[in-house]
Length: 106
Image (cartoon, rainbow, N blue to C red):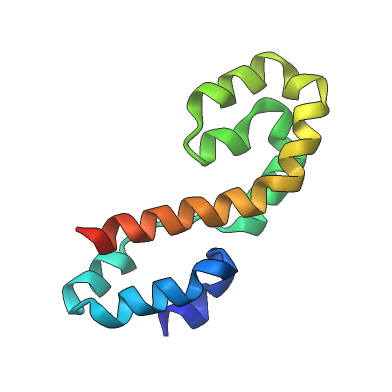
């Protein structure tokens, strides 16, 4: 049930691995997973388009140093902004996957 509501939050190639880990985990893990604040890839994409020049997308993904660099260079004079707009959805899904596996491995 969790994956049917959050399948667009994780990389497609990791869905089978996630299903396997979830089927092996107990009720306690499920409650821990419910508390995770997953990032919405589409919200970060929109943030990247409108606020990417300020590095907001990098800050939201936890890349504070790169966010600061992007802020001070105004999105790498626009070049970095375009690259991040193209890759932010994939990076967001990867961050979500890492958050989930950190809980599952404990």
